[in-house]
Length: 553
Ligand code: AHR
Image (cartoon, rainbow, N blue to C red; front, top):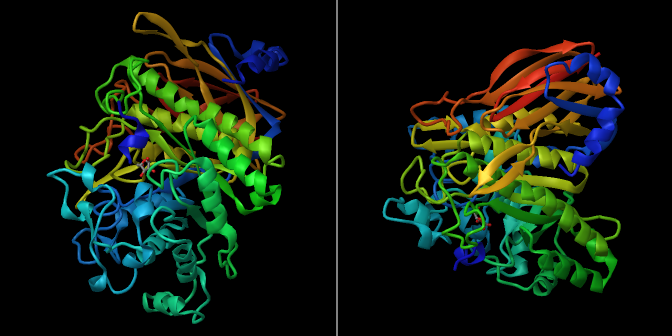
């Protein structure tokens, strides 16, 4: 039996009735014929939504970098110094805040020095993922050509207006190489030999990289450590890191889904050295992939996975159920962290998340781990981003795995072909949440009932999140029901709606997806929504994601 480690060698529901009963008068005037209600509480903040919750992840894995981000300066594909222009244009639209690189598991096999200096002098190396590659995979996926390295990545981030987040190699390089990489990126113009090397690459001025991961999945591909061993490594790697004028935010390698032992072991070991140790940790990186569609039959990593594009309604609900676990994981790990870090100095960073299906739906044969996202993945992604918004106070960052030509990708590309997936559209619809004040939101809607192999199963009827920027309220809502629309009133406690616009992503076919030949099978539809007596009345279609932009009076 294989698990992932081997492979990579509405808590609010109870409160809803209470909140609505206080607003029975408002409801009585507006709810006739409606089956659901949403209430947003303007005076109950959940914290500011860090823009970085809308972060991305690019690894030297399959077609993510080569063919996805990087086409090379000599390519016929429109590019800026080798970086695919269409990707840059799209990422500007979604206000991409931060990008993690170069892995993932690749990071703990990567020597950053291979990826700097004149392109023609850079070595070719065996990629971490070579064993997973196949006959159709191009050589650049198997043998890393190092055409794309630190300079190109930082340039990519500059083009899209995002912060770089670099993951350092803890498994196979000494701590001194981590310090040198920081020196290369951040030492002042002309100050060090590495600053001079950076200048030769076109940037005399420092890159000022703030976010650094100290390893990746150190419980598995990143070193196979025990949590106690990793804590000792983390202390060593972070004990003296030169930071020049850029303060550094170090992110420690956190748990795989519900591995409480990893969180407890690490925090306990750090606390043993003294609580001041927590000051050196900016984030604790949780990874959660939703993959098991076996409905309880197996926990085998290969056998448990389902198909990305061929699925039945039960698979639809099951992947949402698996994905929704991230909320209990946030709460659970937060609690364990707090047992040791009583002031909660360390926040969570969910730097890998998304659904993971078995291979077979690749838009480009040979691109390992590439899958074609459908409406199901749009709903999954929206649900996940809503969870992050609702827990804004506990999270510093989150990074969808992975940006392009990979798992839950926003974009698919091959040579001169490019398409925005339904997941990409969700990121655009949700971009307005970045930097907003997350507000308490309460849903009341009929529960979804379905048959799970002869046994009754349920899922929530509506869920979402709300954020405020001045008088602009953004309410995002997921209706997971595969066939039923929800006629809903959206009431605002402490304010009233003047006007509302809705962008909706939905389709009669739950398998709807965009392809290289059909870019617009699934795109958001915009229309004005009804605002009456300060309340918005809106129908959330079956199997939909909606962004309601409400202007308050
Ligand atoms: O995102 C794919 C892989 O999943 C990453 O390299 C690794 O960190 C995780 O196991």
